[in-house]
Length: 297
Figure (cartoon, rainbow, N blue to C red):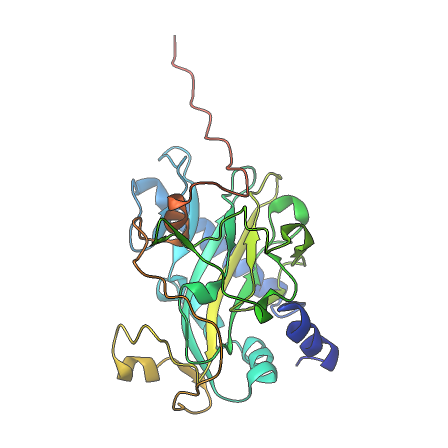
């Protein structure tokens, strides 16, 4: 599935964009399902097990920033967990034995989609080795204006940075950290139907969507079958085995990798967006709040 140059780019940069993974019909169905989810959010007034809402969300103007565990809530999302082209990409990187973790759909709607501060996924869920990656499925064209995922090249080979404030995990790095050249970030842009793949240790983030184009990215977390979570199995070992998407269940393989545990846990739970509210300073500007309608005279 991947060329030698694509594998080399992933190993050097820590991320790649792979075009033409989904067909136009597949993308169209996913967009329709997502629009229906957003419309149903009119009846939701607070974050719940499905929705993570923008701070400016109202029933009249529903604003959803994330659909949590999207694969559990609609078969169109669920079938992508075992999409043959996605699995083939991961097998080219790690070999035949691949295990799924979870999924979330980040919706950066036109004009107000929230940013994600710089962080490393590894800070949230360290494993026995770092053969883990997030696969992002593009429902829309990703351009600089609509806040694409951005990666610091080569950062997956470096340290794990502190994601704490006053000793408490916040799921984000200090933007004043001069060890990281944030100006060197490269955007992962592409056409709808493409996927991004970024290494679990890669420093990444994304700016707010200030364009008139939506930017919806369904993110799946995958790992090699021999990468076991250091924080344990929330649902037990048998459920963990059921997460295999291809190949065989493997015993853990230990490999040298820097680790910082995400403890004590963030004070605000529910999503990365809530975790990051514990930051004292931010790199990205926050979108302006929704304009309230003027009272009728």
